[in-house]
Image (cartoon, rainbow, N blue to C red):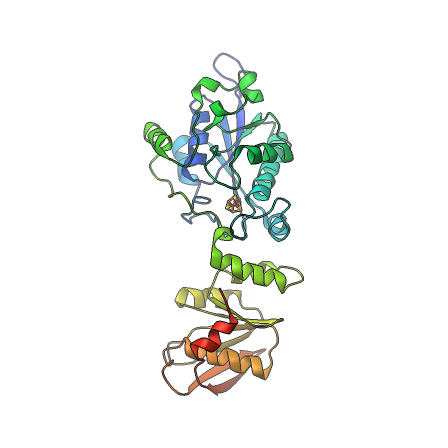
Length: 341
Ligand code: SF4
């Protein structure tokens, strides 16, 4: 595509979460009449379209309003592999933001080469996030993703060495920003200037930054030879308890959890429920021994509406059969020894 003056119109690939910073990075390009193809990633660890974390929201309203293309890409197993074995370590929880950025940028570079775009942009701001946005890590990410000279961070560009598109005149460096640190003052000014109104609040990352989720994931990794997507999906719902090295249970906390658990249930899972009263759905994953079924039944009873009763009838379903267990609800001290939290 060409400009009015018959010069090739520059084309950028944007890492686009839908958060404020990545949206502003795109808008700073559009302001210079640069074509933008935005790449929105999905993983098994949150940042879903429609969630309101800073690392994921629906990209389409902004794309429609401001006029740029969006491509969705699920990182699937590639992402799971770096979650299990990150090369550059983790943040406070299971998040491995440096490896994550490298993977996303490699995908962006592949797309850039495939569609003959000129460079890649991100909404990164120097000094904003401790793990991935300090300068030496930003340099590392650029090198490891093979994007030397072709990775532009429009929000902090004036603080960084000029990139190839700036040096060649595809991008006017004067129209870029020099933002650093955690304050969002300048970003909010820019949002107003551009008429950008709907963006998620900052701070939260994907599920890997959540302490409880990270503990459940750590437990799963240390007890599995290979992570399956089904196991990962189940980490999002319910209270989790480890009964032995091969066995855990998941107990729904509310109707949404119960529905999510039922949707993920496999035929090799046992399931428990105290019928006809308010009861969680419990999945028994692993060894279906009498000892484990009794423990799972007692914990199910503890979270049912009959928790004050001396005896509760809990039904166990497995492989097309069902059986009733009459149990005393588990005491809180007993539950704590199994809880993964
Ligand atoms: S919080 Fe870190 S690991 Fe999670 S999506 Fe964002 S950069 Fe990747």
